[in-house]
Amino acid sequence: MYDGLKGFRDFYPGEMSARRAVTDTIEERVRRYGFREIGTPALERTQMYVDKSGEEIVDELYAFEDKGGRSVALTPELTPTVARMVVARQGALSRPIKWFSTRSFWRYEQVQQGRFREFYQTNVDIFGSSRPESDAEILAVAADLMTDLGLEVDEFEFRVSHRDILGGLLESIDSEVETADAIRAVDKREKIDREAYYDLLVDAGLSRGEAERFDDVLGTDDLDDLVAFADTERVSAAVENLRAVLEAAADFGVREYCTVSLETARGLDYYTGVVFECFDTAGEISRSVFGGGRYDDLIGGFGGQPTPAVGVGIGHETLSLLCQRAGVWPDETVETDYYVLTVGDTRDVAARIARDLRELGHVVELDLHGRGFGDQLSYADGIGAETVVIVGEQDLEDDCVTIKDMRSGEQTQVPLAEFPPAEGRPTYDEYAE
Image 1 (cartoon, rainbow, N blue to C red):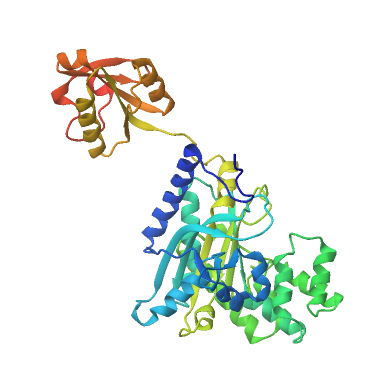
Image 2: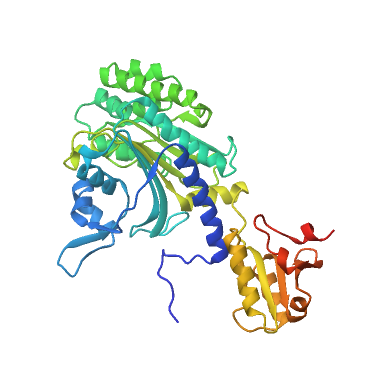
């Protein structure tokens, strides 16, 4: 007997049907916005992640040497891969490039609530547009798919910030501050105690007093306060861009989901502009549900022409927690439209009926074990069959089949020549009169 690996999970049919329903809902909404599906590999060269994030990232990867002597890693995220793909065909792609995919990723990290070593994400990205409408469209598609899943406006929020506001505020305090380290400290603000947070800011180059002043201004409700505090063109431009994105989000019908929150920093260094994270407003989930933002420098960093980009990575694990706690997670049930039950030597007719029903688009099973009548009926009940079609020798002698409604237990005979019809989903109710 073998145990599964820590951080890797099995999904049995009931749970998988719910997960599939959620994925289908997400992807249907994304397609309506004109995003095109792509497929990406499970393995990439380890150096691609080292170049983006530094040597320390290797400790978080499933990295190894393959049989050809290449250092490779199971993909921990999608953004570097899609950046590589854009660079490879940059001249041939029409802009804006709008791509999405749903797939699994791998990181060797501590297993905790909503975080596993193998995890699933739907990634949605726009390349080639720096306009605020692109940022707003990412916010809009994310909000729409959440409401498609059944979530209400008061059950989640997008906390929206801007990396250049944070960087500009830090720069206005002291140009010697390690901005990336300070922004990573801000990203950890809600996860650690206040003293530890201030210590991280001090380690990044701020004095204790500067750290406190910086933290105070992050809590303002008035963006004009930020402009006045920094008094720099960088912050003024970033505030203007943030306002433009929020105005576009209002036009796209999703401004009500957005809250300005400068404490939202997104820890990844490649973000360059507006960033956001989705949170459970009830506070029952201890971390963000998902997040995204603008990363205009990444394509150039991978050897391509400078290309603006913005996207979101929707983690299915934390999203499932939110849906479950909001009571909108799909039922984890296995359902079957028809079970074709055989009695005696009637396999040929039963198989023909099953084929015809499947051609109409229905989920159909029939006996594969040579079971008796009672066992077949029990199996049909176990797989959630709505209707049982009984094909017995006596039925066929009457040129009929018997249609049984599994919920009510009622049944009636139907002429074999009339079943199944050329279209529709024939049930007991249609033949009972």
